[in-house]
Length: 269
Image 1: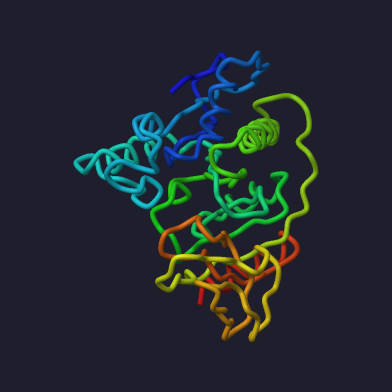
Image 2: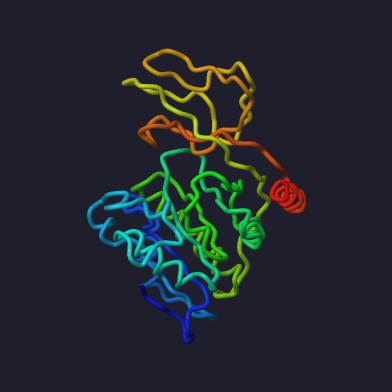
């Protein structure tokens, strides 16, 4: 962890939660060396350095599935406990990479309402609530927002991560200036879309675009898979995951106010 600014850290920027998602790691390293006119203390954190060095998503457990962690657990569970303690009372941006397009987009958890407000001001076209799916993510710890910045391991993702970090630091008044304008739409992530056994996989739909029932959304070894119900794909790709294509989703709003009302109503019941 590197702390910049003249005060104790009030803000945190995290990369490397998954060791094979190097865009955020590169951005963190560049920000550590940059001449930043910081108005608040900022901690720049590479979350899982051993996994980064190994070029692996994780070593023992998926770090982004074991928050808030366990001080007596395996290495990632211990890391999760340490990171959660660090960020619990600090506004946090976590930078991630993906094999799906388009990016960037934000991920939040509805149990932490301030996350939605912050994500809606980030320069991303889409904000996704992942409540009920992929629990144990870093978003379970306080005011933290995940951003999927681009293709894993690419310079494109590193530049996008750096741009998102600068926007975030301006939004939280850690850097002077205004962040780019934002006008996202809002989605809820739902069930994973499983991959049948096969050798060759293709995806025929675009993430965040409506897929009507009866549409061929993917192929396995040339055989089309047909949607039984309408959905919006999220994190869909042919090779991003070994066992799923990605996730089905629902578009819930086109404005922050509507999203707040919808998520609150859904959470209550």
